[in-house]
Image (cartoon, rainbow, N blue to C red):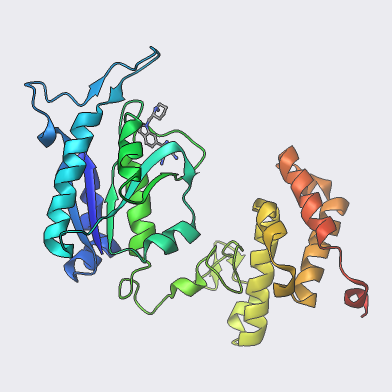
Length: 294
Ligand code: JD8
């Protein structure tokens, strides 16, 4: 996969030289090109921003500079992909569509991504409009908090996509096991993990994990993942497809609800919306009569 990144802080992407992404580049699986946006300015101050039309705080990034930069980088890539090739343009912005594991899996199928991280108040909106007529241009957000610029979001997305590329992750872990990945544990949070020693500062590793009984271990891990998801992300449980839940799952969800009712102190740190949605997820999973059999 080819990845181009245009930024006024290309040095921000030094982390892509190390660890998993660094190895993916060494192996030629990931081909990352960094570009300094100011290389497409023509004034002595290398200006990339100007005051916002309509007034208001801050500065907006100039369309002409981004236009020249994106056009030049597309020409670069066409030397590799062919004269009509076009990248998928990805513009991080707090007002973008959520970047999710599903979007990461989609991007991992692309041969060529072009990231346009901005600064200031963002890029003149005509740039995305202009390129949106010629290629797939996505405005995406990595989360409901405000960053100072798009670079950190690009780092997040390149790692989330890069680790999905064939040959990047050792076989120690397959992406199929990821939280939020399609499949059995889809949309369940990872459960707790442990390694040696069996006792640390008086804290013991759960006995079942030392039992060697793979069936019980798998069951325990699923239960823990369910409980953690119910406690921290009940809206994800509500999204679980009911047919993917077995009788035991439904009982775990039921008991979680009961325990909450019995021990409201457990809910001490719980935010009202968590309380409400936990209640919601419980009712929608009220155990079916056949579950209560034994
Ligand atoms: C790109 C400029 C800063 C944003 C005025 C603060 C993504 N999840 C996310 N949070 N924030 C961003 C993000 C913030 C950015 C830019 C992405 C470019 N800023 C601006 C508007 C308000 N400042 C993001 N993805």
